[in-house]
Length: 192
Ligand SMILES: CC(C)(COP(=O)(O)OP(=O)(O)OC[C@H]1O[C@@H](n2cnc3c(N)ncnc32)[C@H](O)[C@@H]1OP(=O)(O)O)[C@@H](O)C(=O)NCCC(=O)NCCS
Image 1: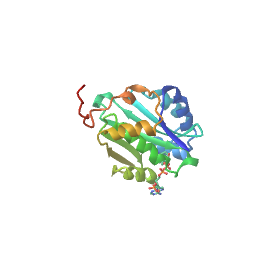
Image 2: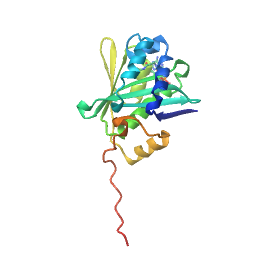
Image 3: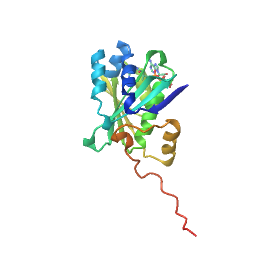
Image 4: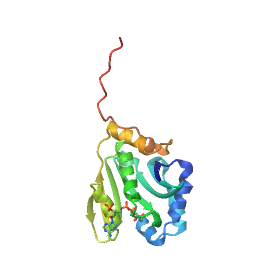
């Protein structure tokens, strides 16, 4: 069974180990360039935790996949960038799709409006995932930009996140960003 949940700060080394297990082809697909161990370590150190949400996919307690949502305070946190990775032996089992779906759910519950993702032209799998989640694809010479519009949160999506992601206290401002007003409140019953 695969468990999906948001990561907490002490799990960053585990995230880094997951990225280091990616083979050269997957590293290039993930970072859009050939990527050494040192570059991966630097990436992990550079994560701006207040503006990052990470969701991990765990099999037998080991992180085998993860999705990263990175926002910036400059745009009021309306738009975030997404990057996802699944280790080779776990690919094509639906984990990538589920991670991105979970990321959309988390974004939805924090009032984020759009998710952007860039992948290589040859990365058909990532493009398939983007289409499944109703993203728009924009092709240029080398890369493909995927743009997913995020719906407003509802009471159901808030419950869904709690139920699906065995929630732990999460790191960062973005992860803790409160839900915007969503479903109308039920009418208050006056005290007898
Ligand atoms: C891209 C990646 C995250 C996908 O994860 P995954 O777990 O292998 O993907 P899934 O099993 O969820 O789904 C793959 C989908 O692509 C489809 N697919 C696979 N090969 C395909 C191809 N050649 N052409 C079109 N679609 C293809 C599958 O049919 C599946 O769709 P379906 O579930 O509707 O059948 C994973 O391969 C990975 O980590 N790659 C390296 C890093 C990377 O590329 N990151 C993305 C850039 S940020």
